[in-house]
Image 1 (spheres, rainbow, N blue to C red):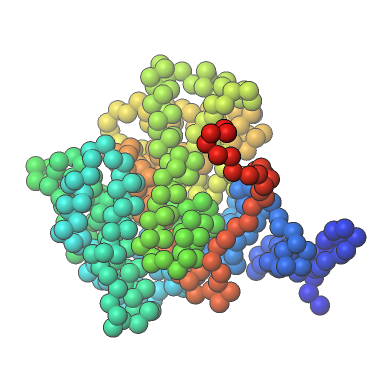
Image 2 (cartoon, rainbow, N blue to C red):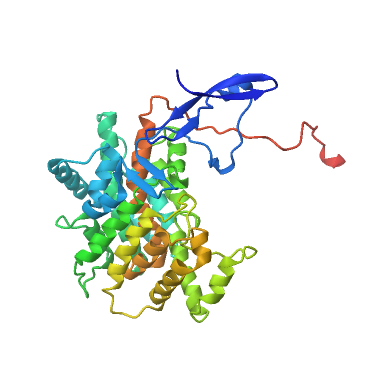
Length: 428
C-alpha cells in the first residue's frame, strides 16, 4: 500500500498520495486537492512546489551534489566535452563514438546563419543588450526556418534542436563582431564547438586568433557546469511557455529573457561590476566586508553563497581550479583579477562567511574566468545562455513528451476589493 499524508479541514480528513523520487526525495501530491477539498495551496516563489517529475538533473543542496542523467558533474567536467554532455542531456545517454561524430557533423552543417538575419543585427540600436538581441533573434529563427510539413514531428524536433545549438553560438559571436564594427568571422569545419566560438569572437585580419587549448578546455568546462540546474527560473519559464505547445524557438526565447535578470544569469556580470566598484574605491576590501557582515545593510558580496547549496557549490569547486589555471597563464596586469584573488582568500578564512555558508559560488569564479578569457562584460550572460541551452532543450523535450502534460495554469488567492458597482464619471 502506498504511503499517504493526511490533511484535516473542517473536521474532514483527506488522504494525499506521497510520491518518492529515485534519490529518496518525497513530495505530497496535491494535484487533486482543489477537487477534493475546494482548497488550493499558497507558495510564493514555488520554493516548496515541484512542478514536474524529471529524469534529467539531480541537485542536493545540503550535500552539494549535482548530476546530469545520474552522472556526477565532476566526472563530466574532467572527462567530457560540452557537445558530448549536450548529447547526454538531450538524449538521456552518453553517445557512442559514431553517434558523437554524427552529432558534431550536424552541428557543423547547421552553424551558418541566414544572411538576411545580419540585417536584423545591424539595425538593432547600439545600446541594446546582447541578451535582448539574442532573445529576438532566436524567436526570429522560426520565420527563417519554418516547419516543413513533410517531416515527421520527431525529425522536425531533432533538426530544430541542432539548429538552435549551432546557430545560437554563431549568432552570439556575430552580434559581438557587428557591435564592434568588425568583419564577421564565419564558423570553421575543422574546429570544435568551443574553439569555433573563440575563433569567431577574436579572430581578425590584422591579428589572427591562435587557438589556445587551455582556453578551449576552460570554456568547455564553463559550459558543462552551466548546462542544466533543475527547475530554476529560466528552465521553469521554458517549461511554462512550452506547456502552451508553442514552438521550441519561442520557449527558448522565453528562457533567455528569464536568464537576463541580475538575480539569475546576470550574477556573474554583477561579480565583475562589484570588483570594479572595490577597485574604484581604492581596492580596500575591509569596508565592503564590513557591509556584507552588517545585517541592516542591503549590500551583499556578489558571487558568495547560493539559494540551493547550503555547502560549497560543487560547480564552484571545479570552476575555481579552472579559473586558477587560466589566471596562472595571464601575463597582463589586471587589477580586478588581483582584487578577486584577495577577496577569495579573505572570505574563505573569515568566520562570518564560513558560519553562514557564504562560500564563493560558480558565479564568482565564472565571472573572473570570462574576464580572463577576454570575454566582454555585456556578453557574460550570453555565455551562460549558450551553456544552459542544452538544459532548456532537454527540459522542453521532456515536458513535450510527458503523458501527464497539462498547460501550466497556477492559481492565486485574490485579495482585491469585493464586488462594487461602476460609478459614472459625473459622480466620481
